[in-house]
Picture 1 (cartoon, helix red, strand yellow):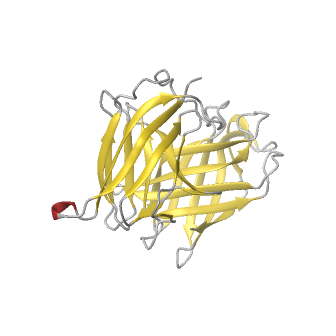
Picture 2: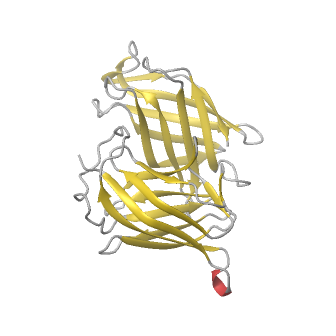
Picture 3: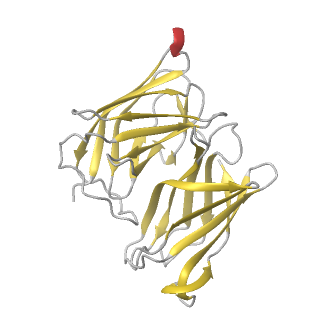
Length: 287
C-alpha cells in the first residue's frame, strides 16, 4: 500500500529582526511517496493519495515546551506546500502530522546517527532536508540538521519533555521493549502524549513491530498523569488504562497500566468481559 509522504526540502529559517525575533519559519511540500521499511501501526489509517500527489489539507503541528506553552500549525496548499511560524529559538519543540480531518497520523522523529529523539532544540538557521512520513506506522523521520540538538525538552515544567523506559523483551521478540514518548501542553492547557514502543507482537501478529501513537490526550490530577488508549485491534472493546506518577524532582515517572474489559487474565487479557487485568509496571526516565 502506498502510505508514505515526503516533505521535500523542508527548511527552518530563524527570524532575526523586528517582530520576528525568536521565530522559526518551517516550510515544506507534502506529497505521497513509496512505503518506507517500517512496520504497521496498531490502528490502520485511511488510504492516502497516490504516489506523487500533494497531500492537500494535511497539517504540520508543532508544540513548544515553553511556559506558557506555544504551538503552531501550517496547512498544505494545493501544491502540498505548508508553512508555519514557531516561537522556538533555543527552546525544545516536537511536531506531528495531522490529516485533512485534523486527526494525528504521524510523529516526527529526529535521527542523529544511531540516536533518535522526538524533541529538538535549534539556536540558529537550519535545514531539515527531506522528511519521510510513513502513514503505515505513524512515524515521520528526519536527520537532525546542522546546529540542532536532540533534547528531552530542556528546563521545562513537569511533566513536559521527552521520556524513555526499557523493559524485558515482550512476546518472544529478540530485543528489550523500549518506550519513548514526549508530553506537551497545548495553548488551551490540554496535555498530549506521543509515544513509540516496541518491539512487540500486535493483535496476534507473528512479526515483532513497533506501536506508534501520536496525539494521545493526557489528564493531570494532583500531579498524576492518566490516559486511555486502544488495546488489541482484534478486540475493539479492550482498552489500556495507565497512570504515571512523577518523583519529587520530576526525573522519573512510575508507570502503572492495566487492561480493561477482559473476560479473563490468563493470557494477559481475553476479549470481551468486565475484568481489569494488570500489566507490568515500569519506570520512565526524563531525557
